[in-house]
Image 1: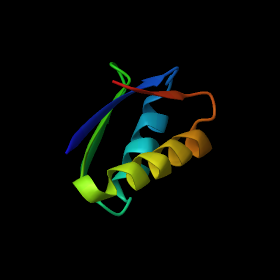
Image 2: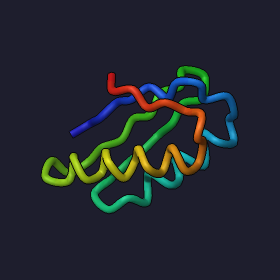
Image 3: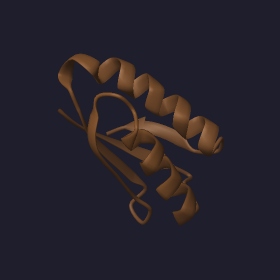
Image 4: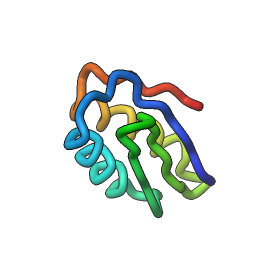
Length: 73
């Protein structure tokens, strides 16, 4: 399943890359991309791990960039 989120207040391309790399390492994520210009995070996850992955992704984003707000699209 493909999931898309908006990363509000993402203001650094380097931070976008760090978030992308961290989310890509979560168990159950098969591909991940963060586009700095559109502030969009898109990843593909196994259906049965969707809820756990989203929870872990939100924690990783907050620990990487505390000012960023994750909004489901």
